[in-house]
Length: 329
Ligand code: PBG
Image 1 (tube, protein in one colour):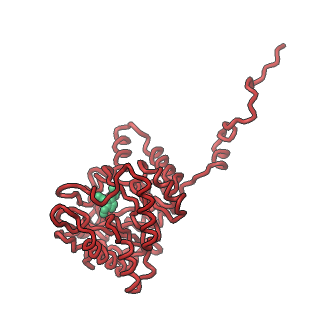
Image 2: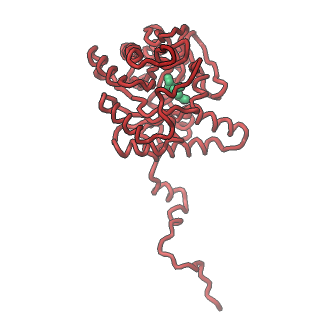
Image 3: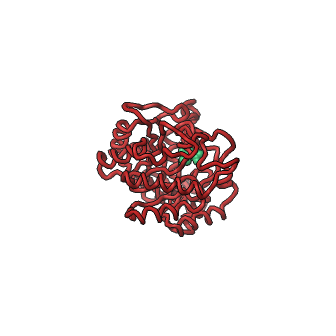
């Protein structure tokens, strides 16, 4: 009788041995997601009891301060340690002066969140685009966004967030010199413990589209090419990150995430610095839209996207999926 063997190839290396069961796969898994690497964005508006869903971002809401407190408390319960706040002011002007109004939605929300949600890390986005009548990230003269006077406004905004009690201020404007100016102003007023997360390598991206609906910050003319980075550049991203670290950034960010994973990996390798990635609105919306049509399995592609971002080098991920992913883990 013929002897039957299962093997016909004489292989010493069979990588499939370690993929046989979930328990084995888990032992050799190199990258893990945990809820404590997520940061959840919140859009804060005026009023009370407001919870208004954003059309292009199903599951994401504009929230009044009282609703934001509930949302943040639930976020903390899900195991997510941090939120980042964006503001929808009641009034806009060419200078974006509502950005540093102590009674505007963001400043009010910071005070409420620090008072009511124990141990929550409260971060604030620092930019003028939500506050200017023209929707640009700075002061406009002619067709130019003027750098240095814009930085003065950003410093005022960051200070007002620190005074309200923010743990981390996050300038997202891409003006030159803003990290250093904010660091200096914070230190001079005794806010040496307030950290800076800089949107260091922020690209000029079409993936911010849904956010601009959420934050009502679409530029009324032209675009953001004069300050946000060109998508083809990576050496420049390293220079941007280096400048921000020299100016005093505590955390550096790459944004968007998925189309820029190579940039993220290089930034983490090169500087070994605390590194954040922003999985932006368009990255969220495209998964949502495909899932709603039954074209993609949302829980799977959510986790696959987030683990890819982490594998590329992100220590922390800002994502609209923070709560869903934390609950699934
Ligand atoms: C600027 C800012 C933007 C985002 C975060 N901060 C928009 C922009 O630069 O136009 C985008 C975030 C997202 O798309 O989720 N304040």
